[in-house]
Picture (tube, helix red, strand yellow):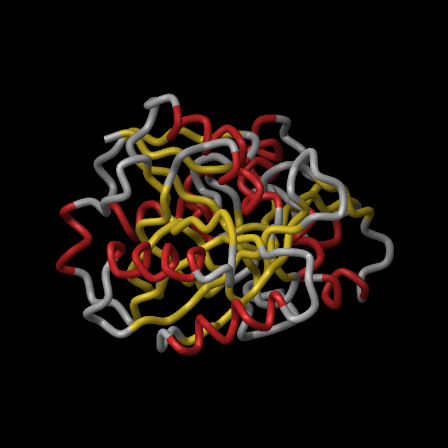
Length: 283
C-alpha cells in the first residue's frame, strides 16, 4: 500500500504514518502538502497523512484550502505528542554548533531554548528530518537540527538534548486522508477516543446567518470543537466555514449529509460538504 505524507522518512508525519499503518508499506515523502492531496486525487497513493493543527502554533490553514481542489476525505485523526530534540553530527559537541536548521514550526516551538543560545543562527528548511539527513550527508559538524528521535535513528545522528520544546503538552493533530473515504481495514481494531466529523459550508451575507447555522448544529446534537473561516476562491470577501464536531458513536456519514441537506433547504447554510466522519487516535 502506498502512503503519501509531507516530509521524508524520520519526519513527524512519517512517525504518525508508521504508528497508524504499521511498517510494511511504500512511503511517498513529498516536499509540499499539496502534493499529498494530488497523490490522493490522481491515485498514486491509497492514503495520505497531513498535519492540520499544532496546540501552540495553530491551524495549518492551507490544508483546509486543498480540499477545494481534491475530492478526498478525512478517514482518521491522530494526535501526536511532539517531542522535539536537538540533533547533532556524531563527531560534534554542543560547543561546535553555530547554526540550527529545521522547519519553521519546529523552530518556533523551541524558541525559548534557542533564545538562550543567541550565537546559533536559525535557518528555516522544509522538513525536520531533512535537516538531520542534510547534516550527515554534508558532514556538517557545526550544524544542529531540531527534529524527532525517529529522525536520529533513521539517519544515524546523535540526540544532544531531548524535549527542547517550550511546552511539555505540545501536540500536533494529523488527518489521514483518502479518496475512497474508507479507513484501512487494519485500523478498525485500534482503540480510539472519540468519533468526529468535519464539515464545510457557506452562509448568506445576512445578519445572523452564521448564528443560525451554528444553532442548527447545536439542534442536531453535534458538539462543535472548532470553527475556522477561509476565503472562497475567486469570490472576494466571501468565506467558507470549516467545523470540527464530536459525535455520538452511532452517527454515520449518511445522517450528517441528510441533516446538512435539510439545513440547506431551510436556508440555514449553503454549499455544505462532509469532509469526513472519522475516529480519533492518540500516539
